[in-house]
Amino acid sequence: MDEQQLNLSLREIKIPAIRYFPEIGSTNDVALEWAKEGAPEFSLVIADSQTAGRGRLNRNWVTNRGEGLAFSLVLRPKLNEKIPLFSALGGISVCEAIIQTLHLPAMIKWPNDILVHEKKVCGILAEGHWEGAPSVVLGIGINVGKGSIPESEPLNFPATTLETELDHPMDRVKILREVLKHLVQWRECMATYEFFTYWKEHLAFFGKVVQVTLVRKNVQGILKGINEEGNLQIQKDDGTTIVVEMGDVQLRPIP
Ligand code: BT5
Image (cartoon, rainbow, N blue to C red; front, side, top):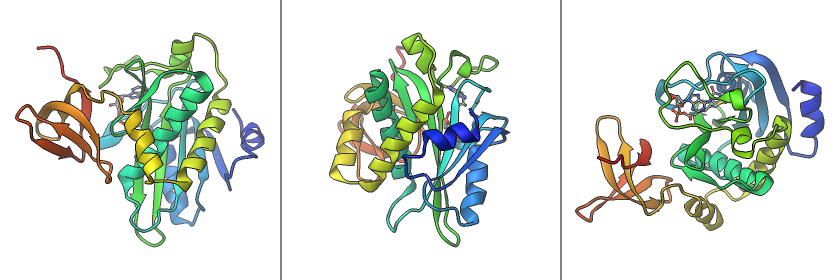
């Protein structure tokens, strides 16, 4: 991967500027700084490896050199466009690109992961900056090569890679191009009926009994869907439905 190849491959997509790094701390950090300096919508930061890749809640995200995709887009939110919907924008776009290009059964695990065969292949981190001209940085990490999964640490969810699922080598830039193509298209109809329908239809564990880990406690119940704010709806055993704004979902562990 290099800047010239990226510029060439992405020339047909509405990307105004690209910053490529062989190695960087976190592409989200670079994009947040660039956004403050006025980077236009769809400015792209991409790195071959990250030394301080971030997940949610200060967790880490590993991007090994030559294996995964790690990139961040600067987006300019309109009034009323809230952060959870940007995570969904990323999720829907990655999901659709994987399904259409690779014919793998990708699903969106609320709020920000893409699963293939119930294993995590992609994580998404949307972060906002509201001073001055508001911006949202949408960071996406995709496990492409078999060496993308960190070996040295336990993972919070089982992981896989695209190459593991398809058992052949893959062109990372081609996958990037497909994701960006879908992202530019979905950006036009964010939060529409079509957007929510696609999200709901590809929601992992829909109708299944799940456990949601919240900051201080766990909640169990049937995953019923998402509301218009992008929050998760869980029906508890007593029949009441609760709305979850932040948490980690997994199938209910077998006792
Ligand atoms: C995420 O957080 O899944 C969001 C990851 C976002 C990464 C992108 S890469 C480009 C941009 N720049 C950044 O700095 N970040 C974004 P979360 O749901 O909190 O999951 C984090 C957890 O996933 C970690 O605690 C590990 O257990 C696990 N993990 C770390 N690296 C992984 C990998 N490559 N594949 C699968 N799981 C991983």
